[in-house]
Length: 322
Image (tube, rainbow, N blue to C red; front, side, top):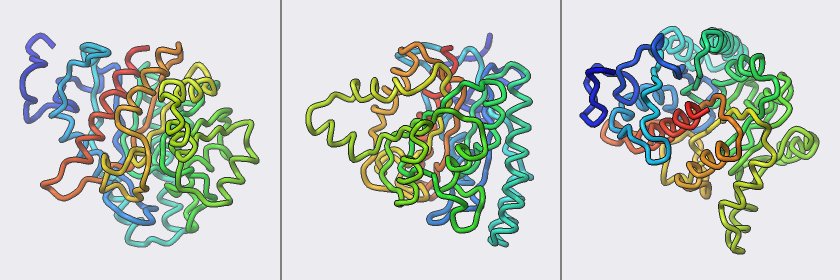
């Protein structure tokens, strides 16, 4: 850090957010997962990690809430070329049997990388890719933090069982977490696109799932309830250790117009940042996170990646604040 100027423009060969840290030096390490083999509508999310990396170099480092938290060290691993190859092969074949096999390989890769970093004492965040990508990371986090809960921000409930025949579909991530892991608490926020089967699944697992539907939250705000009070309602359902699983389409689509499955409605950018802040101010800890479904537009349009990079920076900051 001796020769690093946080007020200068990012160097061309710099790392995430223009920082000079290697993964070995960083306290928080980001795992990129360029994957979208189960995409069912719009594509492009496999390009999300690289787009966020490039856009991140325009983020100013000083944070009004957290100061110069970056000094603890943030680094991103190299984009794994073998995962890009698996993604291409899975997309070309696009049959459930083949995609499920490649998804198994992906889950094992993400699990191993996350477990390795956690064993080194690192804080870990995952940057997808579609929302199927964090399953292995959640497994590894649960081994280290068995009492953790997940704060899931999304437009979709993601509780479908093997959507379109893909066992590890982006639309099935939370179904898999509930049915295949020991997670005791899932708190969903911003949900506004779901089928009857998912609605019933939430009801049938009410002891483990609490869902804050976007329509209900919007109606509360229309009746004069402040967002701060709604955040308090959300947070009371979370345990001490909180893992954030963030699908960018949880935001209003004006912040992420190119994401694969945009849905009208959703959270404001500032509302999400305030929710993160309130979680930590409540005495809880954000122990890790994933950010998914950032799909860049054309080469001249960096808006989605710009928003994604800024969400990512705040997630890093509140995680490093523990």
